[in-house]
Structure formats: C-alpha cells, structure tokens
Amino acid sequence: MQIPPARHTVSPDPSPGGVFGVKQAVEAVGYVSLVAFAALALTTVNQWRRRRDRAAAWAAACFSTLGIVVVLGQFIPAHPHTTTERFLLKDDVAILLLFPFLLYRFTTVFRQATSLLERSLGLMTVAMIGWTFALPRFPAAGEPRSRWFIAYLVGFMVHWTVLSVVASVRLWRAGRGQPSVARKRMRFLAFAAAALTVALALAVANNDQYSVYALATSLIGVVSAIAFLLGVVPPSIVRIMWRRPEQERVQDAIRDLVTLARSQKEVAGRVLGPMADIVGARGLAIRNEEGQMVGVHNLPDDAVEQLERGERPGQGDAEVVELDIPCGSLLVWTSPYAPFFGNDELRVLSTLGALTGIALDRVRLFQQEHEVRLALERTDALKTNFIALASHELRTPATTVHGLAATLSRHGDRLDAEQLKEVRDTLEREARRMATLVEQLLDMSRLDADAIPIKVERFNVHERLSEIVATAAAERGADVKVSAPEGLEVSADPVAVERIVSNLVTNALRYGEPPVTVEAVQTDRHFRIAVEDRGDGVPPQFVPDLFERFTRETGSRERASGTGLGLAIARSYARAHRGDLVYEDAEPRGACFKLVLPMKGDVEAHRRRVFSDGR
Image (cartoon, rainbow, N blue to C red; front, side):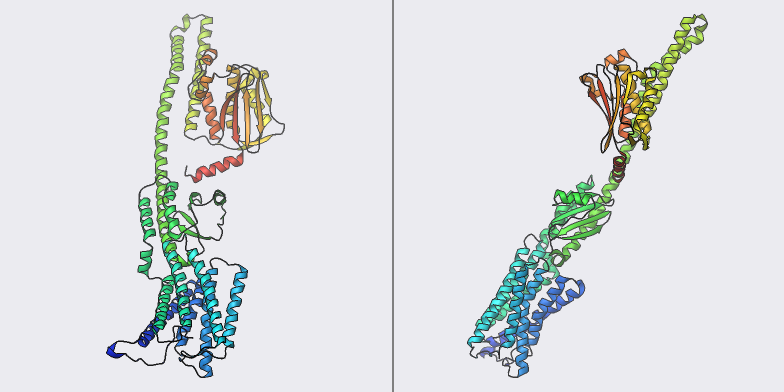
C-alpha cells in the first residue's frame, strides 16, 4: 500500500522527446503535496498558539498528523527492508489513522455527539491502530497482497470512510445558516475530507505507484490539501470575495446610521438585522449607557423579559458574546461555530457596533436638545397662557373691587348703614374670590412647570381624612362621613392628598346633595379615595370637559360661584403624584370622584424610569 503522499527513491527518468514521464509527474505532485500538508500543519499550530482555545487545539492536532505523515514519509524508502524502516512505516500508517478521528473530535467541540457514537468511533480507531502494528509487514508496490493484508485494507478504508463521512456531514450541515465566510470554510473542510478519502481509496486499489492512476490519486490529494488550507486559513482576498454579501449589508447599515434617526429604538431597528447576517447570529440585543434595552432581534418574549430583569438568557447551544460599544453594549447569541470560523466577522461586528454606539449617543443628544427645546416652548406657552387666563379671570373681580372701593371713597358718606354693609360684604366676597383665584392660578402654573415636589410621608389615613373634612366642610361637617379602615397607614404626599380631597369635598357640598361619603381603601399596589354625593351628578355631555380649566357646567354656574379651576388643579396634583383623578356616576344617583395613587415603591420606580429616559 502506498501512503500518499510519500517520497520515492527511484531517480527521475525523462521520457523520449524531453517530456516528463508519469513517474516524474507523480514525484513532482508528491513534492507539492508535501509542501501543502506541511504548510497546513504549521498554520494550524500557529493558530493554536495565538488563540489557545479547544477548537484551535483540536485543529492543530488533527492537521499536524497529516504534516507528520508527509514529512515522515520522506524518510521511508519505497521498499523498506530493515526493522527500523518497517517500524517507521507502521508509525506513519498509525498516525494517518488518527487523522479522521481527530477531525471528528474537532467537530464535537462545537456540537457534542452522542456518547455511544463517540465511544464506538474511538474503539474503532484503537482497534485499527492495534491491527496496524500486529501486521508482520506491508508489501511493497508491485508485490502480491495476502488475504490478511487485503482484509486489513478493507478495515482501513471502512474506518477512514466512516469517520470522514461523519465529520464531513457534521461540518456541511453546520454550515447552513452561517455567514458566507464561515459557511464556505466549513464546506471546504467537508469537501477536503471527502476528497482525501477518495484519494486514499484510489491509492489502496492501485498497486502501481507510477501509473496514470497513481498520478490522478496524487492530484486529488493535492486538491484536498488546498481545500483544507482554504477551510482553515483562507487568504484575505478570498475572504473578501466570500464576504461580499455581508459587506453589502454592512455598507447599507452604515448608510442607515449616517441618516439621523429620531430614537434609539429606530437606530437599533436599522442595524440589528444586518448585524445578525454578518455573523449568523441567533439573537441580538443592544443596551444603552443606562443599561436599558433599546432593541432586540430574533429573541423570544421570555428572553426579552429576562434581559429587562438584568439576566442573560440562553439560546440552546449558542455562544453569548458581549461587545462593549460607545454608550452601551451589544449582546450577540452566535452559533457555536462563530468564534472559530467567524472570528473576522466578529471583528467587523465590533466595528459596526462602535458606529452604532456613536449613533445611539447622537440620538440621545438630539433627544435631549429636542426635549430642552420643547420644554422652553412649553414654558413660553405656559407663560403666555397664564398671563391670558389671569388677565381674563381677574378682570371681573378686580373691576368689581375697584368699583366698590371707588364708591366707598367718593360716596361713602351718602350711604346708609344697610347700603354700607352690602357694599362692604360684596367687596370682601370679591376680594376673597380674587385671592382664591390668584392662589389657584399660582398652583396651576407651578403644577404645569413641574415645580411642586411630591414629598412622600407615612400617615394614618382616617385621622388625616377627618382633619381635611373638618376644615373643608366647616359647619357642614355633619353632612360628610369618613370611612377608612382603622389603623390604615399609607405612604403618600399629605399636602397633595389635602388639596385634592378638600376640593372634592367642597364641590360635593356646593354642587351635590348630602350625605357625602369619603371612603379610603388600599390594595397591593394602589391607594384609593372616593368622594361621593347624592346630587344630580354630572351631565354626560359635560363629562369629557369636566377637568378642563375654566370650564363649568351651566347648572353649576346658577347654583354657586366658582373659578372652574378646582378639578383641573386636583387632577394635576394627582398626576404629579403619578396617580390620577377620575369621575364615575354614583349608584343609585350622584357624582363619584376617585383618587388613585400608587404606593411609594411604584412612585420611586416611576421616578427612576423618568430619570433614565432623560426627563
């Protein structure tokens, strides 16, 4: 049996006409094969020295065996006679038998095989190596082959073919869904293993080392060596050609990043798809500098929820790679083959991630500038509206006060006691109305500008509501009933609660009918206060405008005076507390206003979210 590619000791014999004969061609191809397999061995060993990972170690062990075989073959004559020469030949064959098993083990680094298959293939390799050393000798080329040696050759090819087919199929199938470079590298390795198997089969079937048949065998061996080199370390120009589809996607992604996006989620949406294509990622996620998820790609909902909780979900056998980028981080769920076959692609992804980080920061600055501009515009509009509303609403009481004061000043000595009392009472009422209006306008302006802080304190609900009702109802305190569990304490802003409840109680007594009930309840996450009366309620057509400023229902204008700001201020206080104030029709009749406030933990969580959004 000829172990390809081995050196032959017969000197060249050019054929007539100066043309190299088949023998010279076989030997020339043998030297090319020697250089190719030796270079393959040295390259994989150097790759292992740089990477120091399991995949590189198995690749170095695997392809070093071929290098050792071709180098050792240079010292073995075509017709070994001494014991040392025969022992070296057996060593060469035994090392060759290791190659398909090591190639198979290389594939298991990325995806584990069943233990039964691994044990069976390992035992087969050990048995064939033992059989190799048990043979008395290998017949030289042209010598007759015994039945025992033919049986050995059959076992040799069965062993080699089974292992090579298993490794080739695993590599070929794993290439599906991989980016271009990784897929082609893996399939070149699969093709090379299959080609080397064909070369060995032809070599085993041929007993003439200098025939055209032998030349074809050697050429197939060279092709397999070149294919192995392209699979392990493809040249840069080859990688560029293979990477062209992904390169176009990268260029498109960079072009999209140059175009200004309006949000960080929009940036993530533009680049996550091309990023996944570059490395064949099974999932991607981008975090901003606050650690918030701004975009995910091809991740299930439960995985997204885990990420939002700060956990790192798994995706089967995917390798999780975290890349630091400016103003955030990029999480990549790659296939287990990507770190070895797609190392360059990961570097390209890192570059694109850096550009994405810059784009995220640019969007953040744009959003901050936009929010500042909106805040300035909002402040200017509030100032303008405040002046307009104040001048409009204050005109009537100011005019009345001015007129009454002028009347007292100019004609006070002509008025009798009853007229003086009426003028003074009216003057006092209008002055009080103007003072109330000024106070409400100031409250509204501070609420609009978010200038009223919410200070959460713990207080007894029943005691606090009783104090508020006593002040708001005054002499009508008997018409109001407070209902709250004894001992109930909540964490809320007592000032906000007082402003809201006192306004609701005053409105219920002014526009509704007794009895008025103030009821407080607490659930797991919310605190509710309901103020209910037995009046006519709010007409359905007026409910949409109920909380608008300076709006009052026609019937309420006739029954009592007011500014139309009370409910608007009460709702603003509720929303400043991250809660709300809503209206419902009472049963069987009347009006029911419900204040809903979150508990302290929810308020703090909302504050953290608002702060992280840059508000």
